[in-house]
Length: 304
View 1 (cartoon, rainbow, N blue to C red):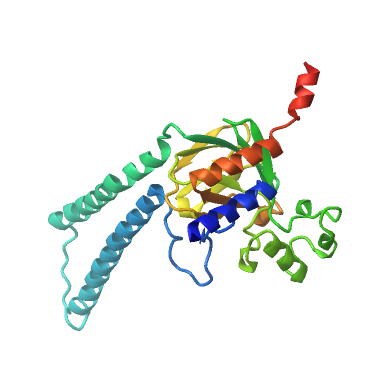
View 2 (cartoon, one colour):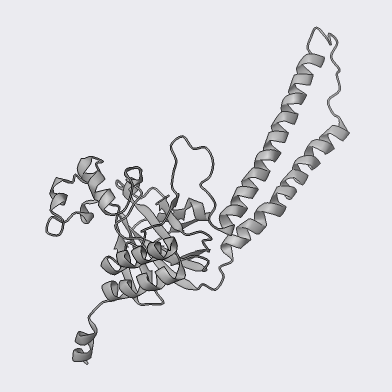
């Protein structure tokens, strides 16, 4: 019964506003005050990055302890008091071979784990859904290329998201300022106060467990599309079309931001991705096509 009520609520939200699709979703991928670790991994790519990071952390910790121990030993064993007559040799073949070979072996060992992770990110599989994302100063444009529709995505609080004719309370909203009017706007859109600067008016919506291929480019300067919880990041370069992929394993709301300095409003260019069930995605897709897919069918028929 609980699941049925949640699903009915999701469909109700979808029917009233196709671009929302977040009712009942847990917010998973977002920054945490005072946090030191990665965001929870939501894809196999992110899990691989986390494991690689832990492996390298162990290795560099061992190297630092070893080198620190050698330095401490040399300080105690070979100081002037303990060793008043220092040796006069200039070479030690065995040690020189060791300090050359050991770092090479360490790097080869790291490479045997890091290169597969790099290849896993760069070898783009066939996607279940393909989305083209274009970076602009300072918002994102998304095109669901398989379904012939697209939309722009602005940070909630951007002046482009205020419209007094459709929401009278927007008259009290000051762009980019978190005050009471902005808090109310966030809550009305289904977000929390601490998601200011992260939440967008429209979001990328994808089904859980499906391979998503993002075609990334830019229209003006270099931007960068990244979702930390997915373990993906790709520069958006004008005139070039790059690709990344992910397969989210858990439903929820995930946030990212432009990660390439792109001008005065770079800090106000967030990314919101909502991972939903296949049924919810299908309902959202139908509503999104109706809302965003261009001219009404009747006009197209008449124009022919």
